[in-house]
Length: 330
Image (cartoon, rainbow, N blue to C red):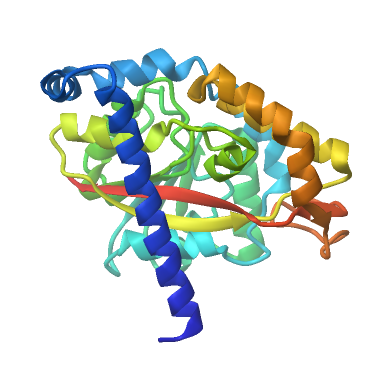
């Protein structure tokens, strides 16, 4: 076995072990409050779609079209296909003649390579800025044949020309930006003839790192989207399968104050999903944590994957991001 394969296998094992550990923690927290029989009945009776909607106001504050319009210029596919995109396409396991629907297509990170591979691609996004970036990328790379238009999860898809069973495989890659997760999963399922797929964060939010929060002193970090997505699909009658895509992000900063502000934003983003005591402990430990984990950045001055110039400081260990790839036959 090559060292690269061994490293990947170790990463996958680690991801599976941590996912199992987090699931046990979640169940343990419920078991603490109720006898086992009541816990079992609660898991069955809970309306997971409604519960997700009730929590929705606590996060995704910046996930709107205007936010992504402003970020669109920082995204580009000209620097090559990312490891995440390669892994996502591998997980899709498309047949050569499969057609696809890419909801939340962004600047075409997936739509463009899939179109190049010969697949018919229908792409939608609620951000006009991202669609403009997609058009620019298509022209720059000589790609045609992508049917793209502006549409949100909340829109009437039928009225927008997205009817039932119009493609073989429908997916949403890190893009379920919606006020109603259950309704969105139902919409995506109806579009596909074979199966639907999504990737969702295994952290409390996409903007946090459970590993960093724990190293700062958090004793328990509640997962959110991945657990709710799986539970909702079960209640809808599907049999979802779950695997994981691991990627690393090398966050860089201008100075210590910049790093401290970024970590403070992470703590704020995680506050609905950690205890008040844990949040206070994270803030108290942050100065000492930065002393140990902020190091000079050897890539300072270079462009990162978002076409931003990297700062002179980075975290000693790259931030590991784990995405749950959830697929289900329709």
